[in-house]
Length: 424
Ligand SMILES: NC(=O)c1ccc[n+]([C@@H]2O[C@H](COP(=O)([O-])OP(=O)(O)OC[C@H]3O[C@@H](n4cnc5c(N)ncnc54)[C@H](OP(=O)(O)O)[C@@H]3O)[C@@H](O)[C@H]2O)c1
Image 1 (cartoon, rainbow, N blue to C red):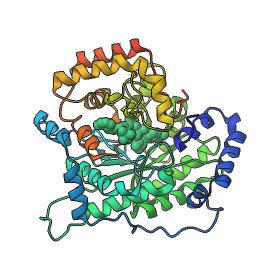
Image 2 (image 1 turned 30 degrees about the horizontal axis):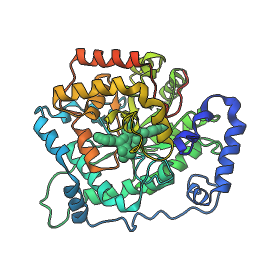
Image 3 (image 1 turned 135 degrees about the horizontal axis):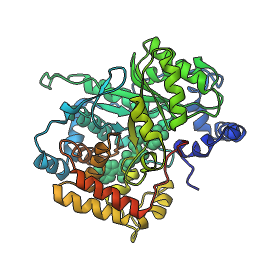
């Protein structure tokens, strides 16, 4: 059963409001049965236990020099290849202005991997120096948008991110003074069924701020449609905005109908809806081809943040249907087994285009997302992955190559099964 992570346990729960009882039962069981979950979840559940004091200092906090050394040690041929293939176009010039005025780069980085050691990703604290290196490299390259959520690692991802930001922005005496861009941090409120009323959103937002070590979140999103209380959550989101706790608001995993409703509700309070974060990749084109949500986002000027844009590693070309020896453990293994045989023509086409542009398949897959007008937020657990992904920017696939990828993808008739199914 592939429903181990939060992202996946939530999957069946948002399908219909008739699932409220099941939703409550599962979350209550998880809370009661799993000791580490109950302790972590205490910060999301006002009624469970006393509030923990959030500490930003921990064993992972490395002196900046050692983080930089780790980063330097892991930069490999990939970043050199990026430099060589650089077209000279500065993607910083392509900043995107979201409804309400927040400016973001054309691509971000996902931080679900940072802190998740529950079986979906394989985080361990000895990765922290390298993760700091990823953070620093992304910031220095203009990939200043980082996406996390309160539930990622049950708060760990936000805490790590808060520390990475602090370390990044602190100039050491050995470092020549230079201008550093302030990161744009996006996080998410999880509408868990026991969270009642608009105040729940404001309280959760304050908890996220404490874990992040910030006074303001740049983009605050509702992680998925709740099984109830949605109108109250939307009011809570607007409260956060009006109180200045957040600079912009968004939703995630919202289909067209709900998007229209939340957009109207927020508009009535003069709060612009900036983004809808949904699964979107060459292996999951459903929002564009089968649902109205892609067009509705355009119509309402709500920007799409594309999660799992590499189909969680599949579109990098590093896995093959014939050899499962390097498949990751856990739920992804099952998903890969199911998807890879039919995905082969898409991955082959990515390889051909990668050769043509002197790029890598992952970079082509991300560039395809950008060409569709969405903002991909690829996750990275290794510095070489992040440096590779940065090379997806600064150049463009031709319209013909995009169309060819579309055709191959359609013909393959395959869909990656991660993420929360979108209602229309
Ligand atoms: N709103 C939601 O419901 C939702 C759901 C899912 C994700 N998200 C967000 O979206 C972000 C991205 O999605 P995702 O992490 O599910 O999938 P993804 O970005 O498609 O895949 C990320 C994984 O692919 C592999 N990878 C990335 N770049 C690579 C490269 N250049 N070369 C080789 N391998 C590479 C790494 O896996 P390995 O290290 O295992 O090789 C990495 O952890 C998440 O971090 C999270 O912030 C949101």
